[in-house]
Image (cartoon, rainbow, N blue to C red):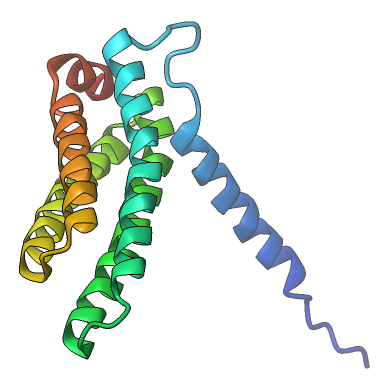
Length: 163
């Protein structure tokens, strides 16, 4: 008698295919032949520009850890990890915002607010540590975060992503 146990490979490949299809749907063109307005394109460029700004913030936080007590070094390490995460997520969400994805646009708004909170925490930490480079990078990040938040909440971006 033969054992007719099916292989898990077709099930796994079907699931991977559905994951790929749903991921592709997030960035596909929702309005073929229609170019996004200038405000939307500029917002996406700002979101991509936050990646190096938050990378610099993470580097300065990592560099500032040397010689500090453990409590401050742990805070700076947390700041570094969150800065890298926020910058990468905002850069990854720039494409769906350009494509006009409603849910991912709302996610980008949430992450932009978190980014603003991160820069405020950076400025507070820099003031506690009296660290000028961290203060300058925090100020740069705060200005960029404010610009991205204003851009993501603008009327033209809202109109583009709500359709």
